[in-house]
Amino acid sequence: MHEAGEEKSLVSKKLLLLLNEDAVCMACVTKEAVGRMTRLIGDADKAQCKVDKLRSRTAKLNEKEIDAEAEIFKAMADPYRLKILMLLREGELCVCEIMIGIDRPQSTTSYQLSILKDAGLIRERKDGRWSRYRLSEGAVIDMLNLVKLMKDSQRDRGDSL
Image (cartoon, rainbow, N blue to C red; front, side, top):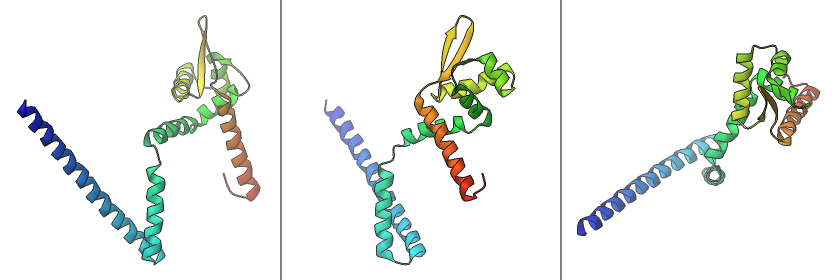
C-alpha cells in the first residue's frame, strides 16, 4: 500500500514539473510577443497591454470548434460542391439530377456529395434505390446568401473577386 502512495506522489511531482515547464515556456512566449509588439508600436507598456488583450481573446478560442468550422468552409470551397449547394437551394434532387446539373460523372458527384454530407451541409434520403439530397438546414441557405452579399458588396466597391 505504501508503494501506491509513493507512485501517486511521483506522478504528482512529474505533473507539477510539466505544468511548471509550461508556465515557464508561456512566460518566454509572452516576453517574446511583447518584444515583437514593442518593436512594431514603439511603446513597451502599450505592447504589454495589447499582448494581454490578445492572450485573453485567444484563451476564449475553442480549437475543436474552429477545426469543425474550418471543415465546413473547406467543404464549401470547391466550385462543384458550391454548385451542388446552389442547386439544392431550390429543393431536393437525386444523384442523377445533380450529375447532370454539375456535368460530372456519377463517381465524382458521389464523392462531392459525401464531402458535403460529412460536413453536415446536406442530408441524404433513400427513396427505393435512389438517393435524394437536400440542404440540411436553413442556415446553409443563409451562408450562401451571405457569400452572395459579400461578393455583391465587393463588386459595388470595385474590389475584384
